[in-house]
Image (cartoon, rainbow, N blue to C red; front, side, top):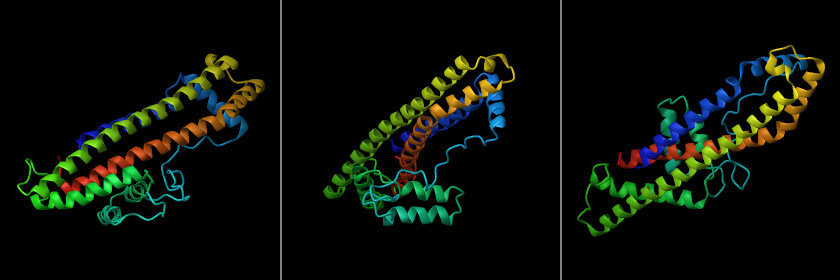
Length: 246
């Protein structure tokens, strides 16, 4: 159940990343040409693509990326997983460790910590796998049922996070389309593949500036929302190592 949810998220993030790139590159061809002309005219560098890193990952209330307590330190389980991906020389190890430090809130952190605690007990008593039927031991059976309940809750929360990812990307793309429509309306030469006059360049730049802060705000929000979703993906991998695939 958790694995299926994680795969769904990866598909959506991959699609969102492709859509993000296409939104910048696959508008009517003349827009890209005109944008390059305008940028060349004002001798400024193009806007960089947002990259998820320690500088733009969601921060805890304490001001630094961290666990539920906002201390900036990983729990022992998360630190062990971080050390493991680094030891196996995973090229994404630094990013994985940064995402693992995101403050997801007390409900999420408590839930995943409890899952890890129960998985070590229940799956440890069953050869590292989730039991297919209730264990004979009453206490172990109760813990197995709780583990299953947490897994179902995790998947439901992940579905909600998927919706947030889609909505944040949709908001960003809607704003960009609004900007593009205004640019085409105010600068007709864009659509006619003509060289931009000085007044056209000025108008183009004015519209860019008008949307700049709002676009950056929504771009940052979408980027951070994706990083929160990735926390679900990495936690799925981490927790499944404790309890196998089920």
